[in-house]
Amino acid sequence: MLDSLIVPLFVTTDLPPEAELAEFGELLAETAGVLGYDAFLTGKVFWLDRPVLPEQRPAAEGELRFAGMLGYLAVSGAGRTSREVAGDIRSAIGKAVTERYGDVGVAPAVFAIRDQDVRERTPESAILVGTREAAAELVSATRSYL
Image (cartoon, rainbow, N blue to C red; front, side, top):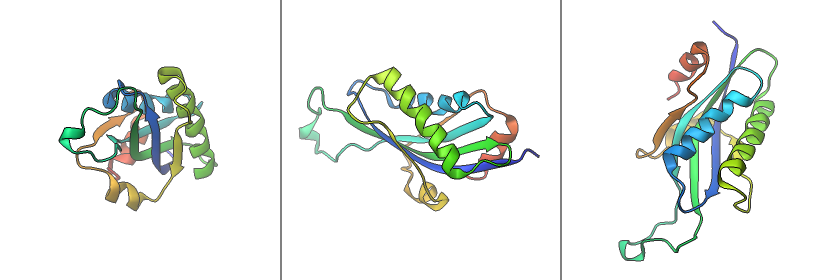
């Protein structure tokens, strides 16, 4: 079995109104592939838009949408800390989101959180995403968390 560290994460950012949630989730998941070490990011993405009544839709044209992901980052190898890998993925996500969507005014927020928060706060309607090309051991290690 591979030595691994699993870090529960919350990622949130503003996105342009035309952004698609599934594409955003795939973008996040694939950032694990640029960390320089084996990693697997999986979780569920969802909109965090303000509640509106049907007659208030559609949102104002040009209004940013607030998206989030609750999930897990699994990395291989001993000697890494949760703080270190959260910082690494924060940088990778910030770069990827800016390259894809441009400057939306603020960098994505990426927090290491409690496992219990991922389990309790993920909306049922959220979309599951995961890094496509990841070590099978890392995928297996996170399976019991989802």
